Structure formats: structure tokens, C-alpha cells
Length: 269
Image (tube, rainbow, N blue to C red):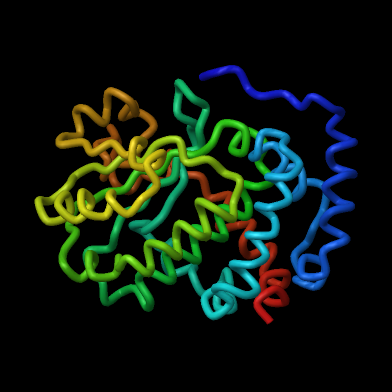
């Protein structure tokens, strides 16, 4: 892990300057978003203490929520996504950070029964947005970035058709442009031939920097060279029974979503 960038001016001064910019922006002030110091600090750290870039990212964060994709974000309510956390979890976060980088690790496991998900792409987008909101308040996640592990096991055409170029652009607009959390790596495992082919095609639509961070594992053995089975759930080759998967998964996010349900209800209006 490389040396972390340090601010060249006191962080308190940067926070004050960023708050002045934010409070002078009517769109941000009227957005209903809780612009507290911890929120602002997340953008400053994530944007390497560059005041201008941090402010521009906050503007994009407000824009995607309140203007560009308001039809999506108006339905992003925590209680709407709880069914995705039923076992086996569609999305989860590991308790353990990646050993070499300290990155937080998120897991996506497409449901074999696509009919069990109300709105496959939008609901997954919603869960990821809610999780990203909480990552803003986790200093190690902001400083070190995140790693996503995507399983292609059981992936069929019903899954693939959800990922259209328009939807992919929307996901990039939100997570790549409007959040200050850096995606350090994307590991794709248990790929079927069709899933591997589609991923190869979709990669051409991604920014070059992000394309270079995608790693496709032909076998779990190469994946386990990076992630020790002792910190993984059973479906990723972890050395545990399926009913013991909860031991390596972090339930913090589900709890905090529900604690902030009233805030998200108001924000969606």
C-alpha cells in the first residue's frame, strides 16, 4: 500500500472552505442532504484533499440524486431492499479488509432465481448507493478504497439483459463520478462462458483506468492467492459450512440503513 496523500493546509481550514462553497450553492442547500462535517471530510479525503475536486464531486452527488436520476433515487428506501439481505445474501461486505491494501471488500452474488428480485438492476443499484453513503463515514474505506468481488456462478441471460449500456452509464455516473470512493479492484470469479463474454464486451465501455482494475479468475485457486479462504463465505470457497457464512460477513450496513430510514424517507421526497 502506497503512502497516503496528506493535506498541505490544516484540515480544519479545508473543511471551513468547503463548507463555505457548499453553503453558497442553493442546489446543495435545498437538497435535504445532511451536509455535516463528517460528510464533507469524506469527500475531502476521497479526493486527496483537493478542495475544488471535492466540491465538484459533492455537486455531482447532489445532481444524480435530485435531478439526473431522481426517478431512481426517489425509490431508494432502506426497507425496500431488506429482502436482498435474506440468506443467501445477494450483497454482502466482508468483516476483514484485504490484507495488502486495507481495502473494504464488497461481494455481489446474483440470485439464481431472477424472478425473486423485484427490479434486478435498480434494486442492486439502490443497495450499493446506500452502502456507499455509509462508506463516506468510514475513514479507512475512504482512504484505502474498495474492492468488489462479483460471482458469475449461475449467471444466465436473464441476468445479462439487465446490464444495458444506458444502465451501465448510469452506474458509472453515480459511483465513479458522484462518490469519492476509489474502486481499487474488481474481481470476477466463477465465470460461465456467456458471463465472461459479456464482461469482455462491457469492459470496452468503461474508463481505461477502471478497465485495468478488473481481474477475471478462471478458477477459485487464483482468487484464493489474494483472498484467504479463512475470511471468505462458503460460496467463494471459504473453509466453512454455508450456515456459518455469517461469521465472515459484516452486518453493520443493514443495521445503519434502518437506523437512518427516516432520513432517507425525507430525502426521497
